[in-house]
Length: 246
Image 1 (tube, helix red, strand yellow):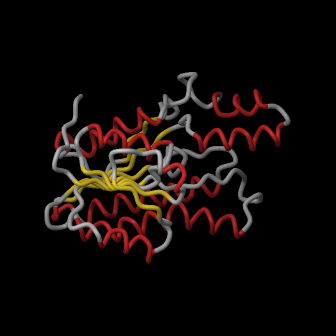
Image 2 (cartoon, helix red, strand yellow; image 1 turned 180 degrees about the vertical axis):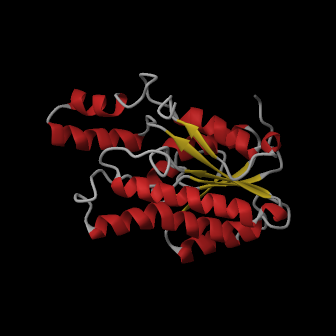
């Protein structure tokens, strides 16, 4: 499906790499005016065709300042997240709070700032949640699963509250996606296991398709949810997990 989004104003967070980057690039290719952000200036600097802003999505002040520059938002894709690896016993209170701040609090902060810019003309919000959430539990993902479950709940609440304003909100719930973030987690796990192949197999073994997803596949779904073709879709969690939840 070819999506045409000329004249649309889109905001994408965590656009420096991975899923956020793929979403920003797809929106640019579709003709949207893209405002991309990331906390990492180095990765964001290589994104061309967008207006780029470096800010911390967990900071209400920084997010508000960035959004004040926009008169309207038609598409808002929030992709910020952090993966803590560990059971609840292995997750310290500080790590729990960090997980909440980056994954769930950032979603609250960005959506709260963005929605007023969407209420006059309506629009589409897409959050990047995870199948590891309220949908399914995974080993050593206590904090991550809890926070992504919160993202799903917040997305559904926004969909219910702002339906009358023409704002749709949906959560994409990927399985394991090959991204720079994943490769960092594989490297960390390889140190724990003492074996890189064992670390990769830990992630591959939970994918019934036998392969990882790609950021571009997730971006393709985000594009559909951002387009008028999905105008009857709101408040949904869409699993894109390579068969994990069959």
